[in-house]
Image (cartoon, rainbow, N blue to C red; front, side):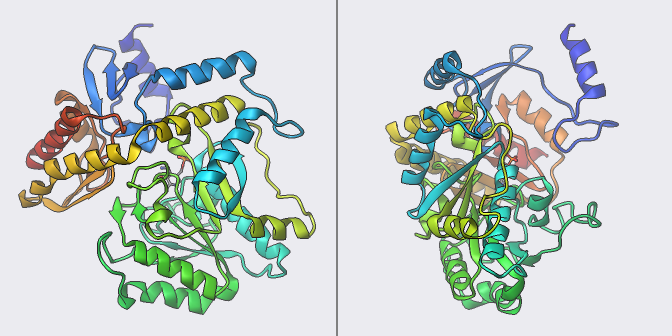
Length: 426
Ligand code: PMP
């Protein structure tokens, strides 16, 4: 099959994320990827601004991660986790326990971010069931929140952009507080918290947990909000007996300038989800972590067991890669790298605020966002970016980047120049 035939087949038979098969968005055939560069089949090299949706923090085709995969592959690619355990899983759980906010002692491995959110929701429900409050079955989340595409996760995603209408007959109904109105560097004033506080006060008897993405709302709008808000929600949850679930799937492993975004507020959630960059983008792995108390209560009442157990739970290949990826992160001066990328993003993007059509410019850690007044035509913008030698995939009215941490000054400059060009010309 030559590439024209392959693209024809792809177009006719393969679903890509959020696309129609009747009129699919164009796709670009990739031949290989290395460091910050993705090489297309025709030889075009693109500087990657997406880290393959937050995952590839060390860059592609990394020798250390390649070696970790190969080493583990010679031992075993997979073995069931029911009745077996293995070094990669134990080592990874230890690392996660040591690195995440203090108090998250228990680790449940699962296959993807969405599944870890399902597991987190289930943990909260089983906790209240065991605690003798089975009526606590609802969740509060944030407008513009995004937690994944499975049903439980969808039910706590933004009610407008989160496909609720489409699946309304099936989706559980939850409560939504407005997206926090206080920017990252701003104080959280009483008016910013008012609606969330009202919801908690009114519904706490039926609510199991508040779930949010700490500090950065990703796929729901790339919004950054004040750590003070996060802190205030944590206090309210404690006061009204709600669990707090932090979805660190996008923010975890340094992206916002802290290892985990909860650290900006100095809080420990009751349950926390990690995924995406966990394996450095090599394969799908996620985890839901919780405090001793959650685990103790769940275990204290029939059925005692936590009722979840995916086939690929604790996959050794994925765990070994995650151990190597986290070690790689810790061994480099990651904070300096993130600060450097943040500086370069600011340098390249801040003046874009003067362009007509740009509503807001936001930079935090290794994330840079141009929020436009109007929707961006993804296919058109993507074509423009490929011609400019970068890989940036806008959505809604957002042109944004979160490059691999190994991006150097020229790489970041190439990305920000392309973003400016797109904002001027699209
Ligand atoms: N939560 C957040 C905050 C995410 O950004 C994502 C992925 N975009 C998910 C959950 C779902 O993860 P996955 O795509 O691995 O299922």
